[in-house]
Image (cartoon, rainbow, N blue to C red; front, side):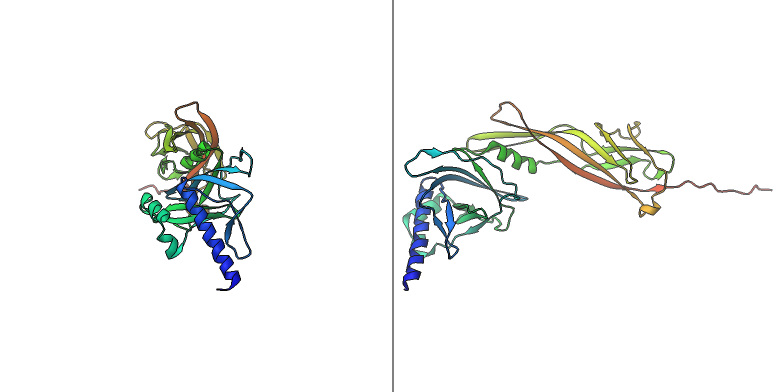
Length: 307
């Protein structure tokens, strides 16, 4: 074996052995920089410990990492708390091929037994972060991976709240109208069907912490497709009740392709709490719903008088 290849082999072996030690200390990770060959090798000046939790959802994968850095000869250094939304940090996960020797080692076999239905892998980000983790089988490597860095030994409750917020079961509401086909110069009544305006909530428990998230409609912004808009705090009333959301069309929808696109943007106030404590505000979220609404022009027809 050539000297350079032996060096590269020993570097890779050192990384995996370090990873094994970290995993034995509770799914550890390694802060790393890339060398000339693109490999991730430990930074000798900083030791990074971490607890890792990987959660899969319909929109991708979230990797929660609680990071605490220590410099040699110093106590734990405070790390900043941030939530990755996919814009500031780009990360990906992948399985690791560790070879026959390490796969037959006692530490690997013990950890593999402790993580059934998982494979040994890593998460790497474009800002230089690198960590070894156990990945659930079936986790999409090309998924929407988010890495959340938090202080101390716990998971950032805001990060959990944001993740819950992104997956809340908001009903796919429909916009209804009476009459079903509008008439120029006559009022059309609108209302929202499939949702009664009640709060929507969800919760999750992670690392001994329970986070509750709740949203409630704040405002409804209507666009009637002809350039006219309205803002309400009401969902409208179902026919035969007289709805307070109404609109007069001045022209038929013929020039609009046969129907106007009626849209309502629902803005929800959002909040979260931890372990049943006080509610804290989150940024509002908005969801849009639309429906096509045809409008016709009434025309007078002269009818001859019968003799």
